[in-house]
Image (cartoon, rainbow, N blue to C red):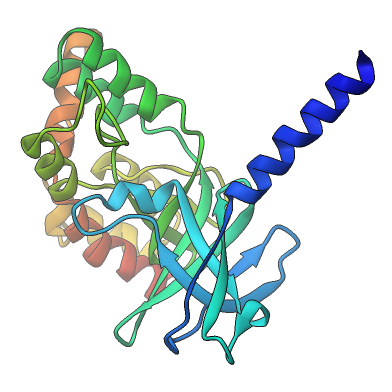
Length: 261
């Protein structure tokens, strides 16, 4: 009986491994790369899991075919799926621009809370679960430096099609238009980037602190108000969604990385 169980388990594992592989046509695409858990960079063909209409899918997994797996005679390449627990990083070219995605440990609490306000019933529960349960995911690198910033999209009610709680176009548009920005300072814990957090993390630099004190950073002028109670906290989180965080990144964080030691 034990042997049968072991054989059955092995069969399931084999099927799972097989399901993670697929073969497709090779058309001479430009190489990207992945970096494995040991830190080894492997060049090959990278295919995004998502698109401009579902960018959160790029955070779940990526398809990769190593250069060594390309059959240039038959023009075929073997792809494997990798998630954030399998590799550290992947890069794909969009035109001549490299897009880098790194594995991060982060749960999107903000999107889960917003979902509880914008979605009702069991759908709200699914949405919260989709965002809180994903603790390992890929986030797109926006700025690399002493303060590293990533872009992270919230997950919809359902991340797969043809479900009872399929994503609406309105929900998709809101998620696409309002990505979250998260940061890590000097390799530390990944946290959400907000105006109040930005004031704290740049305060160790006299140059940036002086500019902040003088009010020279326009994106820091509308700091979040103090929160009182859960309802106020949720409303502030929704209000925080409307903060122009990209301006915060381009103005404050970029300036800090360029001018502070």
